[in-house]
Length: 504
Image (cartoon, rainbow, N blue to C red; front, top):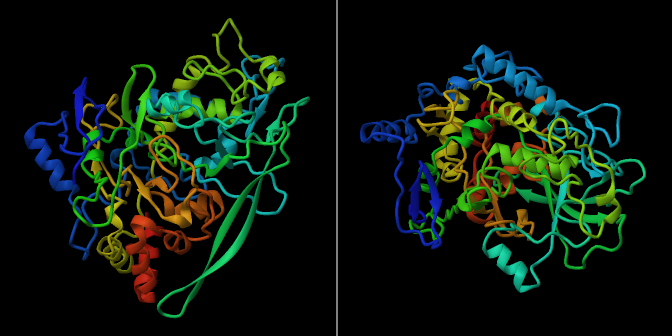
C-alpha cells in the first residue's frame, strides 16, 4: 500500500503540499532491528487454534484488569505511578465538574454557555462510555448532537478550506453545532428532530434483520430560519478508553495502511486526514473524532469544552463558545474568566489535567480469548477481510512523550484512516479531508462492554444500529464485500463473529 510523500521533522511526520501517494514512510523511532521485531509482532495471525501471546492485555501494560462492571471504562492505566494516579483523579474531577452560568458565587466554575449542549464532559460520556440517541419522542438529546455547516460560497471560504484553516464553513446564525440548551434568559438554538424508517434485510438463511434508517431535521429554530443549504451531521459521543495509546501510534504505521487509489485492487481505499496544527502551521495526521478532524487529545478536549459546554481555554479562547457574530446577545453575556487565575474560563492547569485523564482511561482486558466460538469468530473476522480497515495490532512509538504509552503492543482494531462507507451511512457533509461518505475507522476495543457500561447497545456514528449485527449490515461502500459475506454467512459463523466482537 502506498502513502503520501512526507517529511520528517523532530520525529513527526508532516504532510507535504503534494498529496500524491508514492513513498512508504519509515518509523524513525526504531532501530532497523526493532523495526523487524515490530513488523513480526504486528503481522496478522493465521493460527486461530489458540489465543495469541499477550492478546488478553489488548492495551499492553496500560490494560485494566479490574473487575468488569459498570465502571469498566473508568479505571486508570495500570502502569501509572502513584503521583500520576493523583493527576488522573484531579482530571477526573474536572471531567465530571458541572459548570454554571456567569456571574456566580462559585468562582472558577462559571462560564457555562450561554448556549450549550451539556454542563459537563461526563454528561455526554456517561461512565466514560458511548453516548446514545434519545429513547423517546421529545427527549432532548445530550450525547448525540448535530454538526452544522454550509457549502462554500465565496472565494475566501474556498481558500480557507483549501489551506485547512477551516475544516468546514460554519452555518450563518447557528455556527458549527446545534446548541439545544441555553442559560436562563437565552433561547436555545433549536432541537434535533429524528424520525426512523425500518428497512428489512434478508440474510441467506432466511433471517430478516430490520435496520433503523434515521432522518434528521433542525426543529424549532430559536434565532431565525437556518440557511436553506445547511448541512446536518449527527455525532454521538465515543467511548473514552485507550485514547492516549491511539495518540502514540507512529504516523508511519498509519500511513503504511493508506491506499487512496486502491493500488492493490482489494477494494479498500483508506485515506489519511491531514489537519492544520495552528500552533506550528504544519499539517499533521488527524486521529480523533468521527471524521478524524482532531490531531490530539488536548485539542479535542479544548474544542469539546468550547463547542459542547461553552467554556474557553488557552487553545480555544472563545468565551461564548460556538455563538456567532449574529448572536449578539450571546457574545455580550458575562463570561466566567477569573483574571486572578488566567484569561480564559478553563485556564491552565485545567486542560492539561483533563487531557491527562482522557489519555489514561484504560482499556479493559479481553474476555474469553481462548473460547472456541470466540476463536472461530476471530477467524471469520480476519478471513472475511474486516481487518482491511480494522487493523488488529500496532506497537506504539518508543519515543512517546511519557513512559506510560511508550512501546506498547496494542490491539485497537482500527487503521485510523478515512473510508467510504457507502450511501447508507453517508451524511453528505464534508468535514476537513473527509467527504460526505467517509468516516474514520473507530477502534473496536471495549465494544463488547457497551451494554455493561452504557446500558444500551447502540452503535455507529449516530446510534442507529441497535446491536452489533445491525452495525455490520450498515457497512457499505468499501466494506460492501464484507457486508455481503455476513449476509451470506451461516448462522453458526455469524454467531461466532458476534461472540468475537463481544469479547473485545
